[in-house]
Image (cartoon, rainbow, N blue to C red; front, side, top):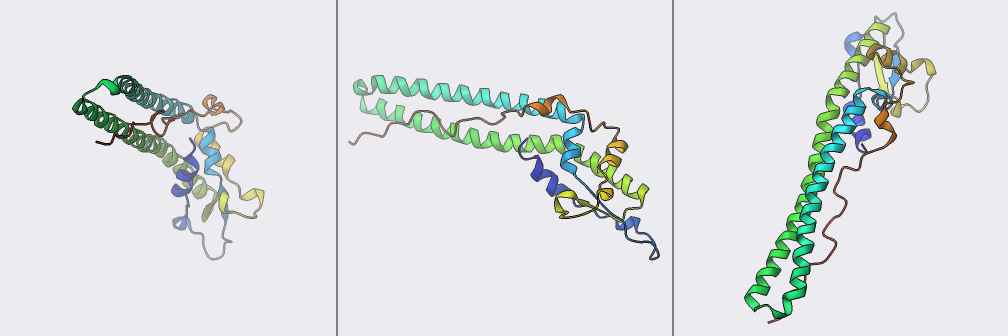
Length: 201
């Protein structure tokens, strides 16, 4: 999930002004690494598996389209010299249309994978956000910042372990699917061969 970091950063910058303490109390600020928390969530395994399965189906459709194109191109190249002009030009138009269709499919597939990834990750991010809010309220934090935005700070400000406890997650247990990242996107940008140029009349 190579876009998870972007999604996490875009989703989280949490301020807890509603939990404000009295003026007599010092402002308590904490920080959390949401990306790390997400990586240890048990939902991560199922999420990666579903995304991998989805991507594989798209890859298979892409391969089918590419095979169809290459077979028709080979047939054209073998018979072009004996084809009538009208037939040859029709075959060339067909090949051009197939190549454009393949390129459009690849673009649409990549967009679809991004949307699928967002739909899978969003509920988990909401769950983490709610846990962070609960931890902040229960422990008197006025602000919880993203750890990525902290240049220097005390270890005592890190609330990751409190969030893990609130979520019921063991941070020392690594989700099985974390070991290997799926290859979801169709690999080729366009067919492996090139559409023939039209002959001059």
